[in-house]
Length: 259
Image (cartoon, rainbow, N blue to C red; front, side, top):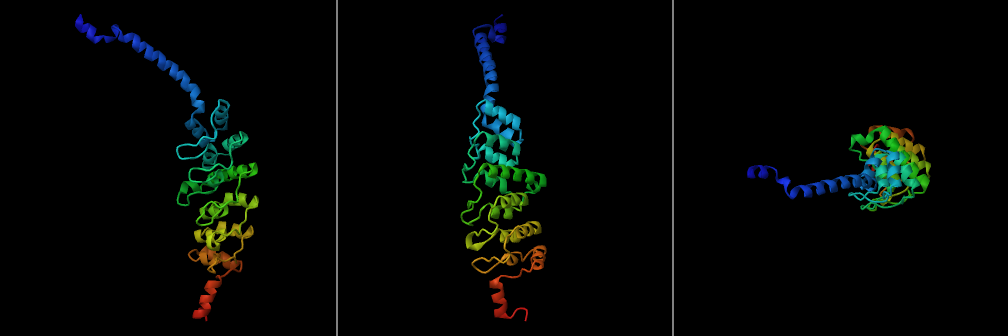
């Protein structure tokens, strides 16, 4: 019989303890179902999937719509990066800070504009369109969009959009009145940046929207010079009457190029 007692240790005082633990666990499960509404991960999941109904429910249950995640991003920054216009609208309607900065010093508008040119998944036209939709929502709601964000290069959002090849966001910025001829460090313009990247559609759009192909850096280089490695861009710029900048022309004169 003693062996049987060893096989069933719960027959003594351990069983009440186990029942208490199970009871507390069941209470904790019920509590967790409520707590999930204020969980930062749940907010992130709703934003990433652009589930506006879920995000609105979280907000109704007291979820903190300003709280940053482990990477220092607010829900609004996540919505901008994910291309989640429905959730961005919910966040804006709840009065979140449109110009809050990430731990790296960037606002939500930056996360709408900047894409990694080396990541093919970020080149999807539908994805870029959603990012542009979020950017327009932010600007319409009063977010700042003309500030310099890459301090060492003097680049603002138009420069960054040109570098990223983000044409939909370029169109939003242009429509909002952003300066397409803004000069960064050493006088570099968005058109020069676009020419360096070699995307004819971005270069063409900037020129047609008012970017000056004759603008030069402090060293006398223009967009034509920056497009040297891209025949299609060179052909387009030649077609609109553009040519080398003053530095190149000076060198050609000095060394008799073309004579």
